[in-house]
Length: 116
Length: 114
Image (cartoon, rainbow over all chains, first blue to last red; front, side):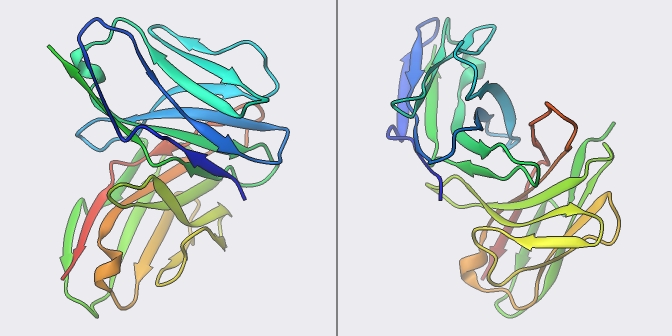
């Protein structure tokens, strides 16, 4: 079974700083996807960024980028020029690539606070 | 497009009562999922469905039943609620279109069992 671990329960940075959230996972699969989801106080789950395991190039979405280390099974999220609106819970998630249901396995989450 | 909607948004039950949570999606997605989120933990999969009329167990299925009689709806039932089922419940849907691997989530239902 796959497991996802986020070792930082809480983080706090000043506005405009850069912050990196850590995520490690355990799997014997070779084809899979990794995701970062943001959950603001509204509770809505919002997809931030997605990485396909077979792609060596790290994914980027505007101020959000990942550092994907497949051999180390590490998938960290970097937020540049952080904004107050980035305050939220962030969840790392794993999805095995399969022809069937696309089940997600989530980490425990990191609560990120951006201070003015 | 409403996306994924959940009914109700909040509910308080007494131990032993039953209820049904409704999830609806208007994206014609084949797959639907029910997750629960507890404090200090990520979302955990309760049950899922790969198509109309089919359901399967996820990671934490005990105490719940599901049904998918229509493609757009996925119901989660609690037959005899217990305090351990106090949680936030999320529904999600996704499509099997090639290259599309994203789950779309509903806004969640906060359930308290006293």
